[in-house]
Length: 357
Image 1 (tube, rainbow, N blue to C red):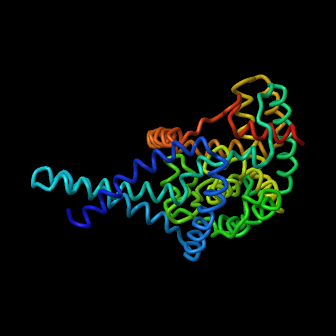
Image 2: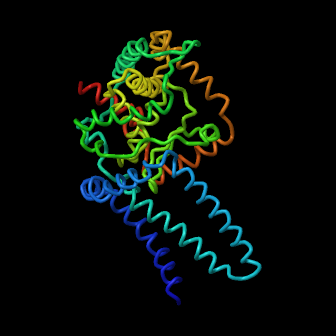
Image 3: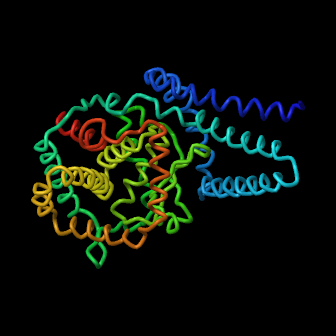
């Protein structure tokens, strides 16, 4: 066995070891928090982010396209080798390549799924809440949204707009995290800015509004979204950049950091994210109460919600359904179960915050 083949066999053998280690460490979140999330992994994330932050484009987008091309070519070669010989050698090449990607993913970011949950970091008590609690939360959030909506710009159609577009949003995004890090140091640190996805419109057909790339440390944002959701979308991906892997917690962190932002358009975006999740939970549990509260939306808030709903209708289809199934499988494989209590973890966190205040 030559050295090159031996190295590939070692890499392939390491993958299941890392997989087993991932399963074991799910039971030791304090260890992962101390020695990985805020220890080993933090400088890796920051270092990658600072390096790729120099580029005005998303290195991750080009990396993904390159990896897909490599995998497609590799499997084509594999089928050819079935006929011409050399199948085992090519199979080992593919397995070594896939194993390398998995190992790097876990070392650079993947173990963050096993870190302490954000409710413990924020000293929030997650507990079962009543419909009345949920109603009051929605009522409070809508009141805040109505007030903030009167302080933001709107276009001639009466829909909320951000005058500087996505570039302006990305420049200002860090301010919310700077404010939040004074309370939650885990959200602090020096990182590169969010990156726009060049194929944003194409990505909209998948229903995905952003993606964090652990291999480059970049929070990548689909800029083909309505303006009122753009700050919260970028903040969500930046939460992943700071090592918070769970989707529901990234949503809550987006709400927190936008709410602490000095600018009204960011505050409005964060509160509207919370309104949408909370009102959806209320609709699932008490439709009459939902209808009653929906009537309290200001005209501006109502226009934004209607516009957003109509905007996304043109992108719905089979591609989105397939992508959702793949994404759900990925999330479940990493131990994400939406709603450890009754309304989904995002809403449970909002309820815990509301009760605490």
